[in-house]
Image (cartoon, rainbow, N blue to C red):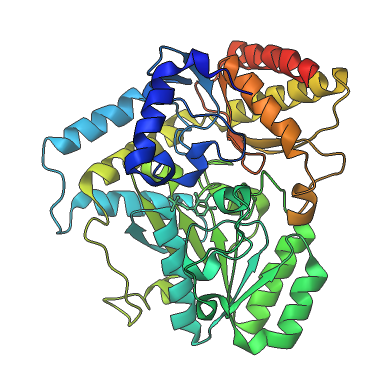
Length: 431
Ligand SMILES: *Cc1c(COP(=O)(O)O)cnc(C)c1O
């Protein structure tokens, strides 16, 4: 169990927050529900580090759950945000920065010919589903067990991330009618998808998936699975949606679709796209995107969508990624971490599975390979809790659930990775 005596101020603030905010947090994954104890309250971030209000320093492997691939407070991003602030915070009218970011996204993401900015990943997936339904004139959507697409009503069935961690695979407050057109299938299972198309092919509006899953922990798709999805969608006029809110600009400059060699019809983005500000986007084939209002009839809007401060942050982030190309280094560092963790676990005789794609990875306390929801949830979450708290007490800030991916940033040095592996050796020896 965690040593809260290291964090008395955070414990006090958590008790205070619990009186005015449900569970003390504005997003459930932050509450330590799965691992027990109380979360550090963060005072500031710098590069690969977080500092809490108790004066503790952590090597951060969450990066705000994905956005900070360049580390905290990257100077170019901070400068761009400050410059945007000087001109105002929101106008509710077109700005040049919106076209700048749209064009950059289109140039980087193979499937995207037109793109609409929104304010979160949830908004992006919700809008993409509505668009696919409006465009096809069909209702049924396929999602995969363990994939998380934000808290969209119709997609909150056997969802991953916080929903999985908290053991509420479907949420109260989602009417049965909202999910009755959602088919949930196992990830990486070609026969199940083939059968669904044989039975319902002419009713299927869309398939939505994480092209590399991060929200049941990192789960890697098979080539055969992705190719089957592409072929079935094309043959049946069904819209293939890659939810790249996590993988977009994370597993490569051109997202998972380029890395995996599959072109979806629509793509959703978020997280890194905003560089730490609230930004989401959905985009894809121009003929589909032109069904969106005001060109087409599928309605979607947002008072703060394309916000100038958020656009400046996103633009600076993608420009910096393009200029630096940190991806080869990210690959190396994440591989160094994975190898070190595997070795540390082997020495402690603890069975683990590490799934990694680029700089996202999960160490599962599991004896069997993890390829889908069923195998992921066979993991030993008690061991995970001990691991998590042991690492936190040694200044290593990992995601507080077995069913999340950790992220390496461009600011994580080989020395910091070594320090992390050393801490892992100590912690695994005590489990
Ligand atoms: C984080 C995430 C979302 C939700 O994004 P929010 O900005 O939290 O609404 C959707 N899909 C995937 C794959 C995600 O990782």
